Length: 415
Image (cartoon, rainbow, N blue to C red; front, side):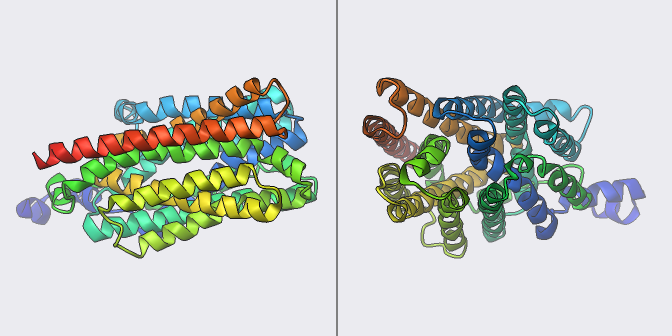
């Protein structure tokens, strides 16, 4: 190898250099922030847009959320295989650029052809492509990084995208006040084009990731904690997927001014952001099962309080607790997942697929609760009680499965 580096041709030198060059923090952080503005709009603000601009009912919003989650899950599980097959014709960087271009140029469709059908197609296609986009980004982020360097990278990356999703949702408030909500999705075109410019600082393929070096920083306990986190991870998004589509209607029940609805909804994003910063800067939670248990309790209690809140203050408190719990679960899941999964696109794809699974299970529970309440709507007490019971029941079942999976995996790793 030393001889090849010293006397090899320039093409070989460039190839060796690219294989070992990790992506710098600034370009991947900026790309992540810009792309995540779309995540904030398409996963959260979309329901305020749909309710105000397209006359969506609560059932329409829950159905849109459900199908978004179904397609996201399917693509996420197949992301590793799909990227591997596409590498016959294009590099992972080229795949990522193509995804961002499609999303960007599809975004203005809702403005050019304003109809419910176009909104459905645009929202689902743009959201689903994210299940291919994010595993590639995560692979570029972690490949070539190990131990403390990897932990730091995951920390600032999470902070970047979570800040952006909060901004994306909060911006819906001023747009709503100025009667410009229809511009929220088209604004993603310039954001994606700027994100593509960041790819100039990416190598064509993720840098070489030394599996043996990675294994030195991954204790056996990480595997059983990953087994637990991968059950709780979709539970976190189940709660979000259940709550986000009905928030506009809960605000109606509380009589909240339209301009304040989206900013108040961003409370859980800000709480999640704060939790991620705390976990990024500390290590006491590494390898500790109790941190996942506390996160699960915060998630469930926060959801129940938010849905049953009698006023905006209690709603904010519930959303804050929910955000803290979901942030801790998410950080643990991606931390253990990428550490054990050796930074591959497949590991990131599984992580994103579990996000999608939560996003379709939550709305499915909402639709079931809506049917069980005999069409009385989300503002009725019967719906609220049924909905809280269904979601908390799912969280209890998920928590028990996480406990069993974690214990079994722990026993296997010790043996």
